[in-house]
Amino acid sequence: MKNAIKIGMAEYCALTHPGTLITLGLGSCVGIALYDKEKKIIGLAHAMLPSSTSIKNNSNKAKFVDTAITELLNDMIKLGASKENIVAKLAGGAQMFMFNEASDIIRIGERNVIAAREKLHELNIKIISEDTGGNYGRTIEFYSDDGRLVVKTLGYGVKEI
Amino acid sequence: MEIKDFKQLDDFYLDVLKEVGNIGAGNAATALAKLMGKKIVMDVPDIKIIEFKEVNEMFDNAERPVVGVLVKVAGDLPSYVMLIMEYETAKLILNVLLGISPDSEKAADSKNNTDELTDLELSAIMEVGNILTGSYLSALSELTGLNAQPSVPAIAIDMVGAILSVPAIELGKICDTVLYIESRFSEGSTNIKTDFILIPTPESYQILMKTLGVGN
Image 1 (cartoon, chains in turn green, red):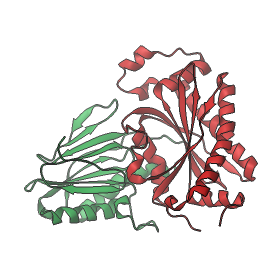
Image 2 (cartoon, rainbow over the protein chains, first blue to last red; image 1 turned 45 degrees about the vertical axis):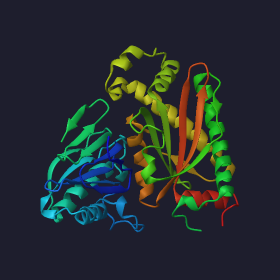
Image 3 (cartoon, rainbow over the protein chains, first blue to last red; image 1 turned 90 degrees about the vertical axis):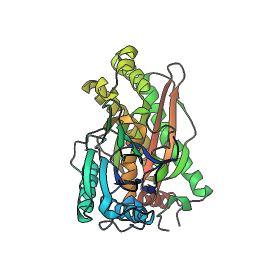
Image 4 (tube, each protein chain N blue to C red; image 1 turned 180 degrees about the vertical axis):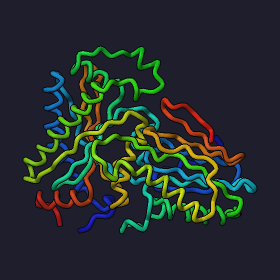
């Protein structure tokens, strides 16, 4: 694959066409894929935690859904994207483990997805598709030519959103 | 010294952690050997300090299917324990524990391994996690006098990267790197291989070092 970049936990990256952004084994983290359909500029953030404001040690902006989206959007605009043309797709936010007790560790995936929806809504960026939740991991591939997001799983098939 | 990044630890502290891991894993290996009625070989623990961006791929292929058992540890040593084993190893262990013969044809056919284990098999694997964690922690308690309380184990069968992200997220609330004290148990004749990983929080790392008299 030409110009394919892997995005690990707490990383984000924006690219101009042609390029592919990939995250392997996305679990409870959320993958936020932004696409400027006019300029074919793509951006992908792999965020771990919902909110930078609820945690003291918050200097690493890529860790949090809210700050990662803002930073990613800025990088895309620097590459020439316009905010009005950007749409979003979400993947991940699974609950990998079943616990008997109801604790934060359980709902972290769901909370990450909710935080992403809220932040994108606040920025007026439309979410056009989503493959979130469930109890399984996902590998995602985001392509600049048409903004398709390919989601691969173990046992739950491959889909394009 | 407040730890925000485990990367600031020098070799001396890493050696102490290696020794701590050795003591815990030695006891856990004995427990596993008793449980299986087989001789279990244990490697010298590997201390890994990993940035979040590397977590998903710390075990080579992030998409590789594995059986993961997660235990949350409370008390004086707040930490996480992860047990990572190949699906085949899980089947071999179940074969010994429950007398179920590994149905390799069925496993190979299956697209989704998660559904392949029955409730009984899942609880048996969780019990293995329970026993290993309990023996590991009791060795540490004996050494330090610290009290560690493991939670009921949880199990997941999926991509190793996705499974490893769960304790890393918890650490992400506190720091920017993850410390893994990784021990590998294996049994020669049946090809059983399992990784036992202790993931201390910065807080428990400090308590541990202070109790051992090597903190500052």
